[in-house]
Image (cartoon, rainbow, N blue to C red; front, side, top):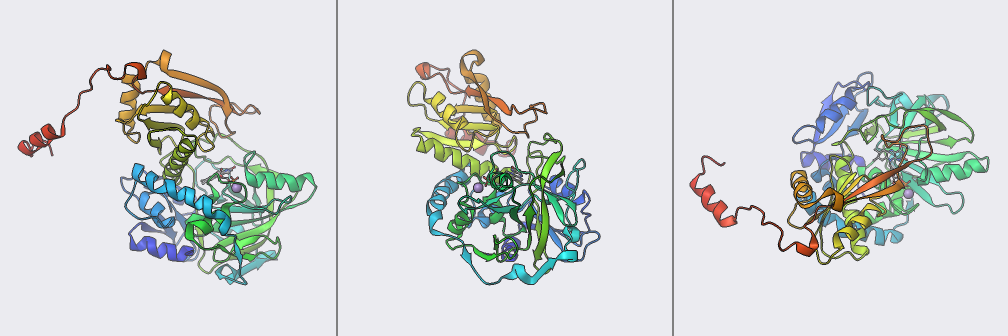
Length: 474
Ligand SMILES: Cc1cc2nc3c(=O)[nH]c(=O)nc-3n(C[C@H](O)[C@H](O)[C@H](O)COP(=O)(O)O)c2cc1C
Ligand SMILES: [Mn+2]
């Protein structure tokens, strides 16, 4: 597997990196990053010569935010995007999961991450140009494009999860992890025994490392999964203080302990829904005992925000492929496409099918809605016929408005899995439920062949007219 430096060189070769000099960590890096995604074509950004920091101390954002960057990061053939990229990803995701058990991480004696080892008074998390990303954030977040590495004290499984990490002072961070996530289960087990939980956090690395850390995989399978992606085990070093395996050629790693019963204020933080919905709260901390970093360290940032955002493209294509695979595994025939649109960020699942039997559309909708991948804070699931392109919202809305009748074709599923980050849930509460609307926007199966003929332009007519009126219709 390449390290981040080699990844950067390859991204430069395919012209997918732009360098920005002279930005301030205080809101400018975050703002430039957010505006970047609103351009027609955008690349990953490397910030250098950051205000108040030495040249070479860099921040990378948008590392997997378009199709060429996703292909580079996951070693996929270049050129595919949208539904085609989903078709490339579907068998790959299955292959990687299937091959994972063959790729246990491998210990090595040393690696580039050991170039600088800071202890005691030399520990300072703000030695790195940690951005304040959004205007109303409660502080500077060193962990956004990160991998938080923990061990399950019951079975020694090692988990990697991407969880937001706020700097509290030079050797303390908050550790906010949502209920049920694997890293949280781990620290809760240590804390229940009155013990500190060992934690290491990689905040600079090849982008595949943190992207796998934010995929919903089987507990403790992330290192293996990365090994399967690259066909070789991940090389790790046993971190001295915690005993946890750290990536040998990462750029920046923080190591320490989360003591039981100690909390600090965490948040607010601009979230992936486009809101500061979970506000601030008391969260466990990490007492940092060591920092490791390479010379000229690169911090990887992935600030959440209103989509399109750093994570929305990657999440859109991977979760679409995963839901498609789950529909296949459940035996739903003739699914033509699944698109969990990037813009609303996976809260709007569109499934297109070739209808085979009465009830086929409802079956596909219900399974997609409650699939492992699609279930978390979902909102709307729409099923369309196979003549509708699920990635084209205009077409999908046309199908909803012309082929469905609300009274007959919309079902509500109540008390489903939601989260403190859901903006529609009024806090404080522990009722983190929301409902789902299922919209059957297919032609009614029983009379689909009598359904009014849609207006189309035949290919022959289109070609003839285009040829004749070249100057008018370009
Ligand atoms: C940029 C980014 C930030 C995230 N921040 C958090 C977070 O602060 N807390 C959380 O529970 N999940 C967060 N997630 C989602 C988790 O990474 C995701 O649910 C992952 O599957 C968790 O790993 P686990 O399944 O091993 O628990 C974030 C995802 C991304 C892409
Ligand atoms: Mn996990």
